[in-house]
Length: 393
Image (cartoon, rainbow, N blue to C red; front, top):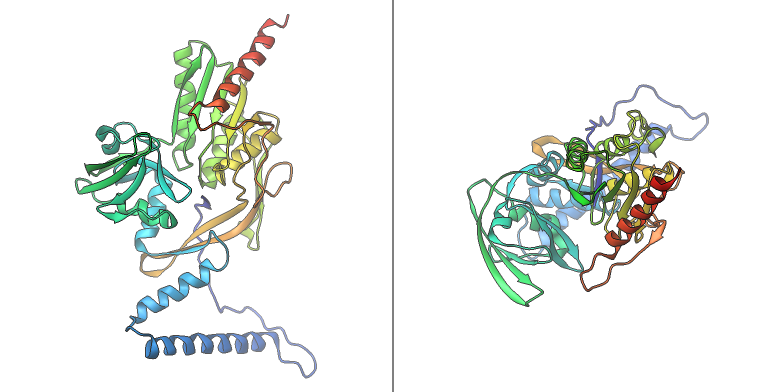
């Protein structure tokens, strides 16, 4: 579940613009730091030498160094990571919404890689893969829920290349095999429809570079279909794992007349910021309810928090995931990168939601029978509210 800035930061190490001296017998601070770094480097070298000499199988030096870097970054927190060339490409692809693959939006349910939805017109959609299907294997390679990133990467590839998905359909306990050919896809992160006259439903599945534009287009389309301005909007952020910080800010800005959207604090000057609404709402007269659940994370929580704290919408569903950290993707040499946590972000009311999430104004849980009680309740509440407003003299 991701939230990261598009900014790329080059870090220069070892450039000193001055020397701080300590009066007395103590060593200067730079010398102490140099000695500590020398001791740490010596320890790393000792471990590498032992592994090279005594591990049961020979290990390539490049593999050892990459493993050391991965471990160092991953040990910082659950969201920081080293990215090899393929992983860095996947991050960039996810930010743009353009990629070659089969066209599935997936998530983890327990340890199962589960289909949220096939994208309309994609190879997976045409083949008949459905929401709720469980991806068991890709080209007979087991789909590992503990390595969701790698599983998604295996479904991607050059347009026109074949891939076989083994899928378990829980409704029938049937194992199915789908032989697909990847294609170039432009994925819309925004879908919507009219729930009733005057009432629009918009779902955002993730936040990438084109999400705000797609959101604006969808609301305009629904207004045209309705023939009159929408009087109610249900914004569905359930199962939205996040994405670009800037995209979340832009979406919130579309829906707010004014007010703070999000603030952040970090060690560098770039890591501390505040974003405020400046555009004016594109649906100023619409009553809004935002649907959230335990898989609404990161960028989705920024939007939900901004709309609630500015009293623009009520939240309905269950508590959100609770990711209050921002990652910056920093390119390295040889096409690699690190994704590093650089900020903590705060909702407009000042809440830091890490590991606690946002509790909705109206708690409604869906039941296993497949009925969407959360959407039904949101539609009922908006309908009642707009009826009262329309009946007011």
